[in-house]
Image (cartoon, rainbow, N blue to C red; front, side, top):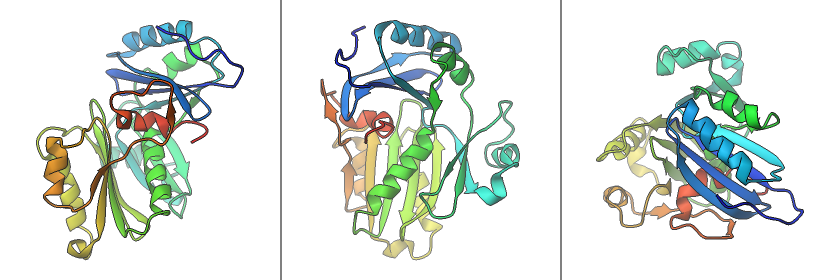
Length: 264
């Protein structure tokens, strides 16, 4: 495995794990030095992959890690704090692991996002990098779309990020987040089905001026994009606005991690 940059500027290692795949990205300022997917099914395989990264990437200054496209619940913090386990049980069913909570004021009223934890992620990462900081991939995704929407004139947006195991989707209208969820229904028209159902629950759905933004494991002219184009006039694959030391084949696949880059 190749090593990272050799100059004296600070560099960051960003990690995202979905239980079976570890995505990692090594960056310096707004430049992605390296990025890779490693097959890592379960905590033991994750430990082996992280140990290899620790040996290869000498001199990393900061480490940020996250569950990749986790299942989650969202609600105003005033009704969530102290009731995280109950909220998770209502939305996701009984889960042995304690939930992980994150907070945001980007959407107006402070919201809490309660994630389903990835067993072993925190222990394995912090055993090698004790000062590593945990982030929420789901919250970073939603916040980044909200910020970009504020620079646009469109009335609404459907944002979808597709990973190896799951996809996260969100609907924004009138400058507000109306709906968001993670699904493992990646085959056929499963994603389209969830999105159309979410729109039908909104008032004046037929009159919405919507754009669809895709990131993740998606290619132009794919079957999924063509399915969405049957229903929406504007469907776009968004590419991360970063510099690449070695451009990957699908830059959009790395949007989950580039959104976490400290300088983006």
